Length: 137
Image 1 (cartoon, rainbow, N blue to C red):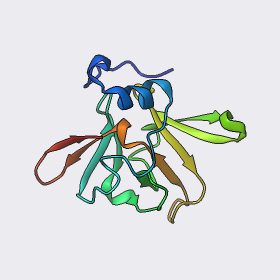
Image 2: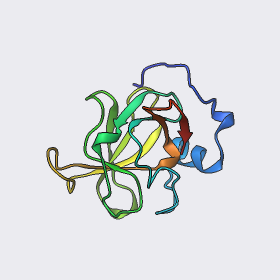
Image 3: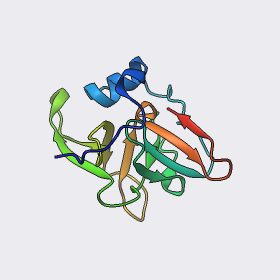
Image 4: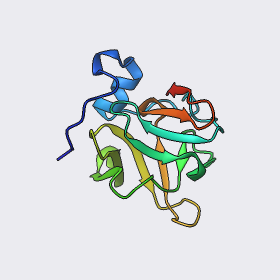
């Protein structure tokens, strides 16, 4: 069961794609996300509850069309669920705090983990370390 938190962004304030991704387990179109090419240093948070999910140091360009990370900020930042939709087996990832859908994790990432957390920009917000500026995906 997800931990109870006060959402940073009320669900009524999410735009259509943010709501579709985080609440309906949707996927944004590849190469369309606002945070895909972000190269600033900072922290990626859950758009819905602001829980920290990934440090920018773990982000890499996998060429898949979505932001990719090789590890979360902590073991409990991400919740993992079996996903057998679309006639294939995948591992869905959700926010460990509010259960918002983030994307999927695959075993084809770089070392040191060998994992690729393939995350929808629309499920994230980014906080720049230097300026403190926040950018919603």
